[in-house]
Length: 86
Image 1 (spheres, rainbow, N blue to C red):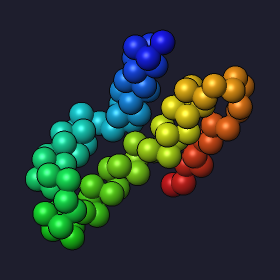
Image 2 (cartoon, helix red, strand yellow; image 1 turned 135 degrees about the vertical axis):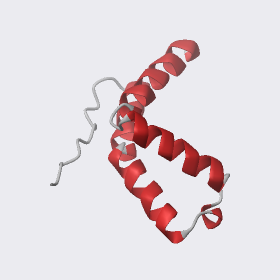
Image 3 (cartoon, rainbow, N blue to C red; image 1 turned 60 degrees about the vertical axis):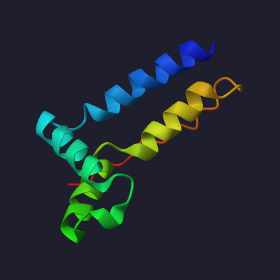
C-alpha cells in the first residue's frame, strides 16, 4: 500500500511540475541548488523569481490532492481548485 501511495504522489508531483515550461523548471532547479535550503543564499530578485515559479506550480493544489488521495476517509471532496487570475 505504501508503495502505491508513493507512486501516486510521484505522478501528482510530475503533473504539477509540468505546469512549468522546461526553461522554468531548469531555472527553478538552479535557484534551489543555489539556495541550498536557505532563502538567504539568494538575492532578493532571485527569491521573488523562485516564489513566482513555485506559485505557478500551485503547491496548495498539490497538497490538497495528495491529502485527498491519502485520506483514510473516502470521498472527502476537499480538493481545492485555484482560481486563475490574468
